[in-house]
Structures are given as structure tokens and as C-alpha cells.
Length: 337
Image 1 (cartoon, one colour):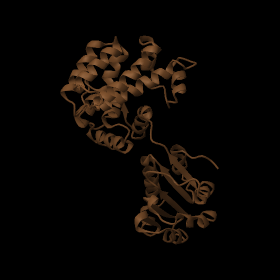
Image 2: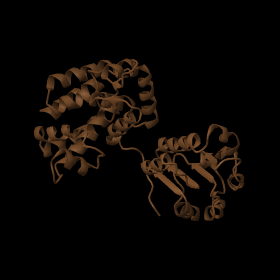
Image 3: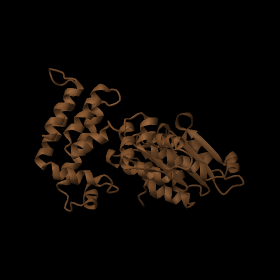
Image 4: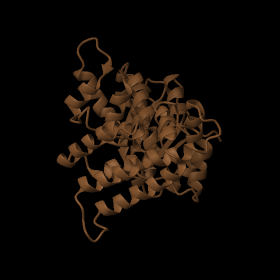
């Protein structure tokens, strides 16, 4: 059975190829929603949708009703589309087995299963995998966010410099639906004919400072710019709600964890390091190469330990609780000296 990815499914759909059954599940609901919405909007014309599109919700229907609807023939159209949203709430899902063994070829049946997956020990999971298109997503990795943002910008005909991409990543985190929504808002805010997302635009409409943010802090640490790093930390201390210490520590831990792995890369080039880290592009790898020149591997191991300690301090694990600003200043000093 072919293993499907979001990209391979979307490539088929854009080519006009629709399969009889889709089971979309996993931890990253954004991709489930994107595929489901694409099928609803493109498998039928607007006129055809009136008679050939049925949308159920798992809590409000049952599997037998879904199957009986899927068995119908389309009305004055090449196909009908039957969608089950919140499919994880469907009861007696095992009854789907018999339909899966002989699905109606003129029906596109879509199950949108959120926040989890089918129990792979069940026979229905085996039949879905054998006779349907299955997408089982994992939680999106933080270090893949820049490539996701760049791909989404390209899809919308937009561009952004690396700083703008990192500002979006920092301010929103790994919420793909929200990232896409914020980019859509930014595109509306662009002057007519403009396609470039800038740090100034992100700062104005999303509310993150283009000078004092985690991207600039990481840049200062990579370059061992003590003065700039301390300026940013002081700004964070004065604006703790906009710059929570937990987010900063998480981003630093992710960066230094990847940096630690870089020392083991067989080929220490942008392409070699990107492949070793499992990144989809070499975007941002230059920072790792520069950091390897400025920090020894043994020190990076120590830094990871220091970040864990700082995280524990920020959560009150130490007897004498320190303000977040003091925790970060002490951490920075130990990282950069």
C-alpha cells in the first residue's frame, strides 16, 4: 500500500484525481482541514454541490447513515462527495469494513479524524489502509516551521526575508492554521501590487518588535554579540507578556540541540548539515555553521544543561526564586563566556 503524504495527496487532487475513500487523521489537524476543504471546493462545481455534497459531523450521525449515503449515485454529476467531520466521534466504525471492501466508485468519501488516529490493531484500520487514501500526521516539528512558512508564502504568491519568517515563527509558534491565517491577513495589508512581507509589516500587524525578538537574540548569541544580546534581554524583562521566558528558552534549547547534532554531521556544509538534521531545506543552516566556529561541542553540551536549569528556575524549582530577567541575564553570561 502506497504511503501518502499531504504533498502527494494534494498533487493528485490538483491533477483532478479523486479516490473513493480518504481517511485523514493524526496530530496535525491543519493538513486534515486543508485536504477536506480542497475536496469540498473543487471536486464539484457550485451547481453540483447543491445535490451531491453531504457533510456529517461524527457526534450527530452514525456510521450506517454515512455508508447508506455513500452508496447513492450522484445526481447529474460525475461524482458525489460525502464528508464526515469530527470522525473520531463516530461509533461502530468497524461497520465501515464491508463498504471499504467494495466502495462506490462515484463517491468521494472523506473522514476528517481530529486529535488522534484509528487504533491500528482494529481490522477497520487495516481495511482503510488497504483500500483508501490514509494520511496520519505527526505534530509539526518546530524546526520545520520556516520551510512551511516559505511554502505557504510561495503558494500565495508572496515573499519574505529570513527575519520576517523567524518573526512569524516566534510570535505564533507551531500553530499552522494560525500562521496561515496571519499570513493571509498580512497579504491583505500589503500595498496594491506589493508581494514582499517585511519585518516592519509583521511588527505593525502582529505586534512583535523587529529589533527585540528571539530571532535577533539567537543571532546575537551565534555572533557572540554580548551588547546586543543584553539589550534584547533587558527589553524582554520590561515586556514579559510579549516575550515569555518559556518561549525564549524553548527556542534556545531547540537551536542548541540541533547545534549539538551538527558536530556529528559527516559533511559540514549547508546542504550536508541540513540533510543530517532532517531539514527540508538549507534555510537557516548558516547560523549553525557559524555557531560551530564560535562554540566548542563540550560547551554546547553544558549550555543545554544550563537551559534546563533556567527552565526549572523560571517555574519556581529553586528555593530562592529569581525574576525572569535575572534568570536570562545569568544564562546569557554563562552561554557567551
